[in-house]
Image 1 (tube, rainbow, N blue to C red):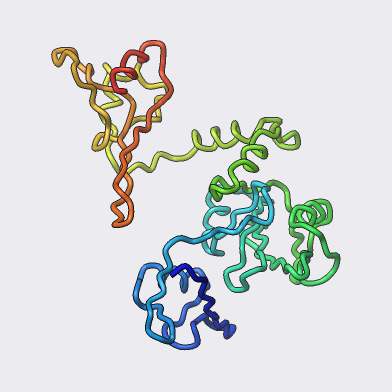
Image 2 (cartoon, helix red, strand yellow; image 1 turned 90 degrees about the horizontal axis):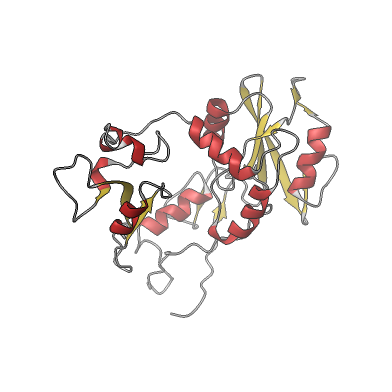
Length: 283
């Protein structure tokens, strides 16, 4: 109704709730529940409060090792599957919103270190305070922490995120344009492209059409092929020529939402000299 409503969220230390009703282990679960179950959240007078569009706040840093909203289990899975000893990332704390967590792979296990944010400074529960997350990370890259067990926690190589808030895209582009002189000497865009090429193929949907002999030379990369069920088929072509209706492109449709019309987009590869005419035929 053109007004801003403030709702207190109780944190007991064990769970989050709205002073009654459903209880949740994390703040994100609480918000997700009320977004997905419209009508559950009401004012005292009974008027329904709708949660529809999250207004994202700016990330505390544009560094690529910051993963934002990522759970501890997700961080462990990522670093153990794709990282190596010394790989690290920083994420938002789900148990203590406003604080952060440094997740580091050490001796083939993941150590989580709480980073407190108080009075616009950051620390790891004691010792030196820093004005930014970046300064804190740089300090502990040079001066490794030691666990109570005696294990030394080395921050050797960042485990970079590829997911970002749309509002921070300008800053991320600047970060990706920087060369990583310490590790590879390559810019971030190239590093991310290389990591995509190294990922195992886990597609569950068929891509057989692009693998046919008559279509292989129309693909810029042998492993980037259109999915058969949503691929674009060219019209006004000679059906007697094998593969004449093939182009490396897919339709992408937005999900149905009562408030927004369904839109359809085209995702396609950059043209090859031999496929430029196919591209314009598609357009």
